[in-house]
Length: 151
Image 1 (tube, helix red, strand yellow):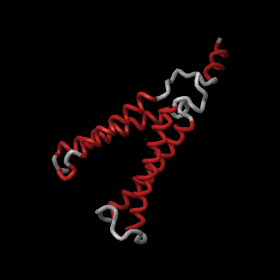
Image 2 (cartoon, helix red, strand yellow):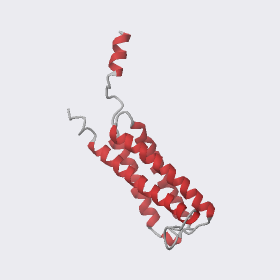
Image 3 (spheres, one colour):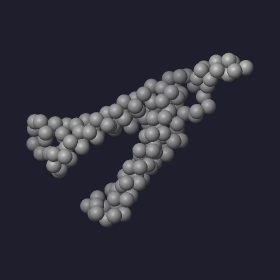
Image 4 (cartoon, one colour):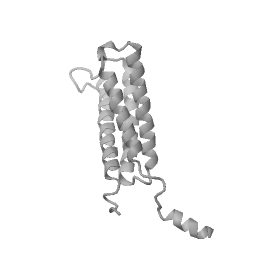
């Protein structure tokens, strides 16, 4: 049996990578809000939108920080926080479907094949979260004690 530090190494690496991406994109979203709403940080805006768009970017950045924190919990305890992987896979599948719908609509012609490639990458990441997820049958000690009490 592998040590606790090496158990589910691939799952932990996947969750850590996803957490880093969440934190990085969340930081960009929040910084773009600060750039246009409070004081100018950059010479040119990061996103071409109005004040409502920057407000939504700040909100999305905050949500990405929270999601990244949940993924860090999954890195620290993959069995205890295994639901985070399921929720992440669900969100990635939804994002993949939305990108395919955007590509299919034809409204995003400038993105060309980028949307299909992104959809494929997101779907593969979602499958990785599903395949690498720790099994639910792992005994954590609490189940063993409850079985002894029932006997």
